Structure formats: structure tokens, C-alpha cells
Length: 491
Image (cartoon, rainbow, N blue to C red; front, top):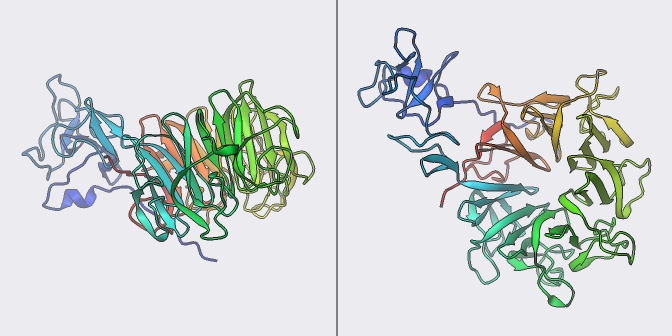
């Protein structure tokens, strides 16, 4: 089947320089003339020129009378780039690049958090409102009615039709999403056929969805509170409270609620150490996929429970885990599409589960269509070579990605929709780049299904992969084969 990928290139200034109109820039990365990289100063591009005292000359068509002149500053130093994420606000022209806003003299990201569903995504803006884009067939966008997809973000409303404006955390899964609000309450919307919304109902008898955010409750209708993290799977949801306890609700056919049963729950209940046992505690972060849930404890232990049909839990069986069991010692674990990967103490990565589409990164003899493995295998640096090393964190979805200790991003696996971010499938990790430079300064990865987003220490979000439903909110329905800035919107 042919790949349908929108290969979006970086800005190229050559056309701008050769025309008669000024080329206005907001980022230094936009100033590229053939193989020469310049800087953006006062809203226009300047390029290296050794005949200028400060080493840069404005391109001939720069506006404000700067065209062809040497770029100078009062300090006699090369002009300082402005307008980019984490850079100073520009004095002329747009103060900041798209997706950033000027606050206290610095360009800061409009969006503070991004999560990915199957065919949609959601974000928290700087003003603590929540917006979603993409498919809305079962109310995934949270605006109150199911309907057509939206390629631009729309604001999420609660069950009283009020725009949510106090969001502090967010999670998205196959067809539903949840937000943590001030005070630690949780509100969810979208598909609810298995009780995954957690409002003490399933909507099967009337409508299959809850299209606006409604509050999650515990047994007896008591609101779930004191929550600091929420994670969302296909038909279940889990949340971590401030004391390190975990609460889950929704579908439970594979034991993904971690209570020792396979009984569906439409209200939040604690994960247990054993059936009828005490609550599972000490958790510092969660990660989950379709029907598998994983958690890390303060001591570095990685525990998982739920579906194990492809051997993703690495115990050499395909038996589901109905309560949490210790999987590994790890600083980072990720549950992907029928596979699980984690970082080891020596900075290598181990994966287990479905081997199809090279998700395990071990470049076996069967390569891209490798068979499942029910025990952990190491991700390799090259086919038949040594182990991939230097990993710090993983982000696992349909494809697999890792942040290295040098803050660069490497991905492997399927790229039908561009989810490896390299423009092609990769059987071992390959480095990602943006505008012909390594994608670095990354401190967080968000991966789910067929798309991935990376957060930079500057506040910038870059995303790639499936966008056929307007999933990434960029105003188009084109898949992204390479990382591109998620513009977001400042409010």
C-alpha cells in the first residue's frame, strides 16, 4: 500500500531574497539561503559577511532600510536572534513565532501540555483552557455534540456547557480524554461504552458517548479528588493521586484495572496489590496503552498489569496480569501498541511483545515483520550490531522513540503515517532532525497510536505522524513525515 505522507520542508529564503518584496522572519531557522544559515534580526534575515564588523549583512530586500547593510548592535556584537521559543521578543514585526507569546520580554509557548488519542489530540493552553482537534465522531473534542472532525483546536466544555479554564493535567486514549482540574478532580468525555468516563454510567442504552466533560466519581457518587496525573487507554482510565495511589475505571476484560478481577467498573476504584488486598501505592508516574497499564515507583521499580496476549509483559507467557507485578528496574517505561519498552540502568533499552513493523528495534532476521517475543530483547544500534545505548527516556506508541542523554530523539518502527519522524520505516533507532539540524533539547515525549510529539526545554512542541482527521490541529488533514512545530493558539 503506498504511503501517503505530507513531507513538509523547512523555510527556504532563496526565493525571498531573489524577489522584490521584503522577506519578514520571526525565527533564525527561517533564514536559509541555499547552504548558508543566517540569523533573524529586527524581523529580517542577515547572513555571514566577513566584511562587516559584526560578521553579518542583511539580505538585499530586507525592509526598514536595512537591505544590504551590515547588521550592527550598540555593543558591537552580532545581532541577537529574537522571536523563537525561549528567545527575546522581537522589537519590530511579530514579537514571537507562531505558537509563542511575549511574556516579560521572552517568547514563551502558548501550549503547556499535549496529549494524543487515536484520531485526535488535546492541549492545555497557558490560560488553563483545554482544546482538542481531530475526529469528533463520538464526542472526542468535548464541545458538547458529536459531529464532523476539526483540523483546528476547539475548546472543551463541561456538562454545564462552561468552557473549562482551570486545567492542570490531561490524558487521551483511543476515543476519550480526561482533564484534571484545580483541586484534583477529574472530568472525562468521549466514548463511554465500557464506563471509561467514570461517571457511574455506561451510555450503551442511549448514546455511545458523553460529548462534554463530566466528573469522575468513586463508589457512592463521591467525586474522585486529589489527583495529580491521569492516563487513558482504549476503554479504561487510570489516575494517580498525590499520595502515590492509583485509581482505575472502565473496561477490564484483560485485568487492566488492576483489582484482581476482569469485571467492568464505571466508577473509580483503587488498584490493589492482590485480589481483595491493600491499595497499590508509591507510584510516581503512569503510562498505558490499549489494555495494558504500567507504573513506576519512587524506588525505580516498574510495575505493569493487564493485557499480555502478545507477551508484552515479558514473563515468557501470554497470560494477562490481573494485579500489578514487577517488570523491571527502570528510570522510564512506555506501553505501546501491543508492546512495552523500558530503559535499563546501563542506558540500553529492552522491549517485549508484538514484533511486527519493527516496533521492538532488534532488527531480527525477519526484520520489519518480526515475530512476537515473550521475553525482553535489546534494542540494537544497527542490524546485528551492539545494543543501542545512551537512552534516558522512552515514548512508545505505534512506533517507538527514545530521548538520549544528549537530549536528541531517535525513533524506530512503522512509518505508514510518518510516525517515526524520519520519512520512512526504521528497523533500528534513527536520529530525528528538524530544519536540517538534530532534534535536540527534548525533555519529554508523548506517543500514542500513529503520532508522536516532543517537548523542548524552550517550551516548543513538535509533532509528527498521522493527521488525516486533523489530529494535530494544524489546520490541515495532511500526515506529517517529519517533526513540525505545533503552532497552538494563545488566548
